[in-house]
Length: 423
Ligand SMILES: *Cc1c(COP(=O)(O)O)cnc(C)c1O
Image 1: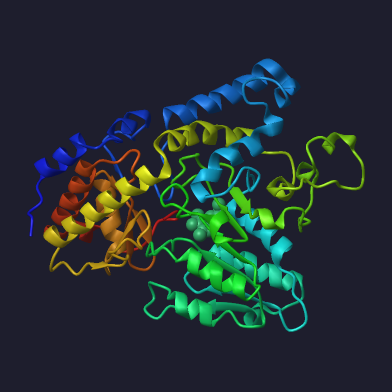
Image 2: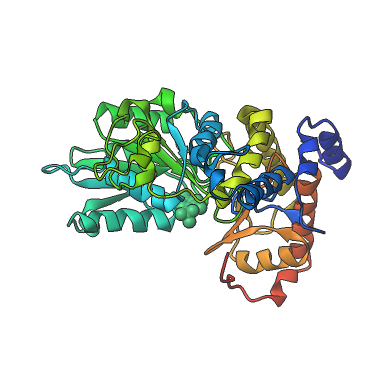
């Protein structure tokens, strides 16, 4: 087995064709940032487009809707078009709007059509809580008891889901399927193509939450025939806290009436006719509701430029190298310290590594004290995300070295083993 050293990390950095992008980001001082899957960092380009849009308001007033470099009236469609390659969608299938949770509400309102005995929503027991809350409330709004009508596929080991188990649960009483693309804890990538195929064969609409996959892994939603998807832009897409999210609706559903309507879902040309009968856009634009959050969309424009330039396949390739390198270092340096790797070690892993340890909460605090920003997930998870556009192999090296010292010297013992308010 090769022994990995600091100079070998530095060597990999010197051969990295994406290395220059690190200079485009603001890296917090004296910090190794390993939390880009929770909140991506600010780039100079995102800062620039935020300033540009602020300036268009300053100099144009209301004319900013139709004038300037980025007229606000068409911005959601334009940013949608820029995001489309990241999900494998066509122009018109993707729109920048809302947030993950509001987009999920919109899409369930649109695609969940209980009929006779077909009333159930199929989800999984490992999904992010907000998605589950949204699904339960949608069932309640339609008069169904979530304890009976929300099916959550079980994980056999508490970490991963088996596609076979999910497909077995696609029974005749299921009216809608909503699943994560990448699990937020274990980083497992679900086989979206296989799941979509099975759902399509059974005529059950299927949608994916791409929060942990967009900007980190590749998707072919259009070709797979996936019905819908939704995501945020503040994780791997580096759009900033609360930046505007996105959604995808497959072309085969164009013309389908939105469940939640508002005037920004209108055809652009007729929106300002101010009729009381809505004339919805024929594509994914129909699923917008009200006035776009222009200032929260602004940084996304600059950030996406880099994804356009580099392409998602090069980003994914470097991400796999970084996490692969991290996994090797964990094996080399942290043996016998009671860590368990909680992510798939093969290419079914997304953009982060999950280390499990019973002292995880306070190990995270000790890492932070030492300048490494991890992400704690209760009860025992340390998530580490080396991000292709701004992290280095040397960052990965130092992260694992610091972790080793913290464990060797039991530095975590001075902290309480409890999470912070935001973890
Ligand atoms: C981050 C995340 C969310 C957050 O939803 P918001 O509406 O943006 O707050 C929801 N679901 C998943 C799977 C996430 O990873």
